[in-house]
Amino acid sequence: MACIHLLLTLVFAVSFGTPVEIQRPRGVPLTKKQFYEENKPFTCLDGSRTIPFDRVNDDYCDCKDGSDEPGTAACPNGSFHCTNAGYRPTFIPSSRINDGICDCCDTTDEYNSGAKCENTCKELGRKEREVLQKMAEVTKEGFLLKQQLIEEAKKGQQENRVKVTEMQENKKQLEEKVEALRTVKETAEQPEKEAKERHLKAWEEQKAAIRLEKDKAKMAEAFLELDDNADGFVSVSELQSHAELDPDADGTLTETEAQGLLGGTEQVDTSTFESVWTNIKEKYHSESLSEEPAPVETPPDEVKEPVVDNEPYPEEDVSEEDEEDDDEEDDYHEEDDKAPPTVRTPEKSQDDEEAMPPYDADTQVLIDAAQKTRDDFEEAQKALREMEDQIGNIEKELSFDFGPDAEFTYMYSQCYELPTSEYIYRLCPFNRVSQKPKYGGSETNLGSWGSWSGPENNKYLVMKYEHGTGCWQGPNRSTTVKLTCGKETVVTSTSEPSRCEYLMEFTTPAVCQEPTNIDLSPHGHEEL
Image (cartoon, rainbow, N blue to C red; front, side, top):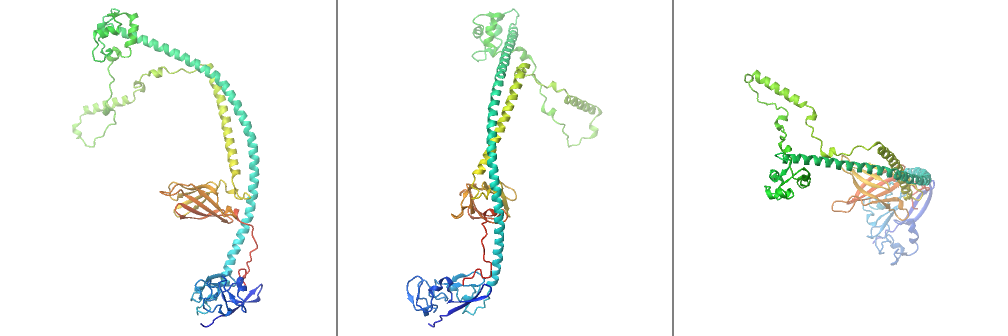
């Protein structure tokens, strides 16, 4: 095989155009130049064998690792180094050498293919330097903003600590006030309770007396109703007229049963009837109630709105008298509609009649005084609860890991949204992530705050939100939030790389690092 070994002489312009010549075989990076010395045998980089140097780049693969053919396509596992002066150096598989496709921006991979390649390294380098310049500016501005955030966070944390200390002292005073008002309340409630009990007892006694008088009146009325011959006695035959008193419910009150109800005698007078009344009053039906006519209910048709018949009647069939009758009926219904509501108001029930009367003036004074102490106590209790809630919220905020210098504090209690074509995604740092349909629908929880989950060297680059709404026949939703440096705090993108596992990109100045000196010269990426 013809030896096509060539020593490549490279000339670079460095530091304002100063020419520097560096000789090494084609496809070899500068970092490995020391392994390719022209006047010495070449040892494969994997140490497997040593060959004469003239077999390097001879288009025949001698080394298992392909290191003897860095500039040809002879070895299937070889790699070619693109110097790419003015841009960034890179490696390509050796199989791409002289394949007619320009892979290296400096065209060095197509040295013997005849392909017409154009060196684009300077243009690519220029564009990359613009990007790097913008990134450097963003990083610089972001870092300055980060310093402000840190300063504000530390100031805010100190203010919160002072505030909690003051609120704890106020809380103690409120607790003392609550206990003092509790004592005042309990002291005022005792005479109130006793007065209410006296009032209730008096009313119960009054109700019992009223019931007793009503019962006596009913008993006297029943005696008169049963004494048909008005001889001052209720006899067995007279009692038998009330079949509802039948003890065995067979529909007939026999003479023996009636005599039993009368205590075994043939008749009783008013004094003895009291013991009889005790046994029969639950079943006894007053004759006066049964004689009262049943209330006439107005047929439903008469109370309905007049119905207009759609079928026309001949005018000649309607006489003037009929029209007058209709007018009278109309007048009657109008007057009936305007009847005072008292006509249809039912009588007061027994419960209404036995409603407890208002408290007397002295008792009401005690009730008002006790109520005032209760209001004062409840107001103080409410103030104490609010104070405890405020202290708890501040202490919860102080307990969060907001970064090494508290730079993430400003995100607490804030939310950031990203609208898409279908949904509105909402990130509330240290709280939750959610998704809501853009045109109506319920919100879905994509995860609640879990922990910082970035790499070991900086865990504050990734947030993890877990235990969201469960997917149908799947796991609970979760969201990973990746943080990158930016001047603004904003959600830039969202995706669902795996089912029910969401990914958000989030920019914030809080992760911007202190800028380092970046070589933005045209040869900043060159490997000589």
